[in-house]
Image (cartoon, rainbow, N blue to C red; front, side, top):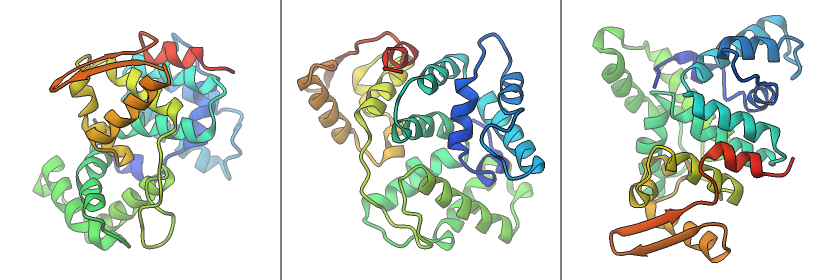
Length: 256
């Protein structure tokens, strides 16, 4: 994970990231892939300066991801999945490389969701930001008060861009459901590093989508009933059998 104000300040860049991965060339570096994919400004950046910022941000973000995840995202981007599915899957990859956003989502915001908080503002997040940055960077690298509020706003805006919070000034928790294709992709992705089914279902990563372990298990059981995977559970023991060996293989199976 990386702490970088750039990752939050420049935004999620969801469509730009998909274009990069649609044009992804295996064997090339992240920097080369991003530079070449965006060289002709395929997403219509408003200025050369903004395009430069997009390139720099994606180089930083994607550069933190392991090669297996990059291959999975390339396969997913080239498939015909809907924008909501792409957005949900990218959320997982992007959150896991951001040392401020990931704990914000899986700790602070998830706690607020569990206690039915409403109308969240940057001022609500600011104390947590101050404490978290101090823990990550040390007291000597503390943000200014403006920097704290800006980071808090960026955290809320990022969660809203991924659909987990509303886009209103004061943030609320709108209805959210993880699409089945995204759920299956994430199960495959998590299984690559967490083969234990119970630990997989209890992963804090699901909190990115406001899901508790019991809710994840319920969704997995539903997919089992629809024969999209196989799941057995008895007490603390669980066995999950997925149709493909990896997230990349699953993504490649999706229709173009």
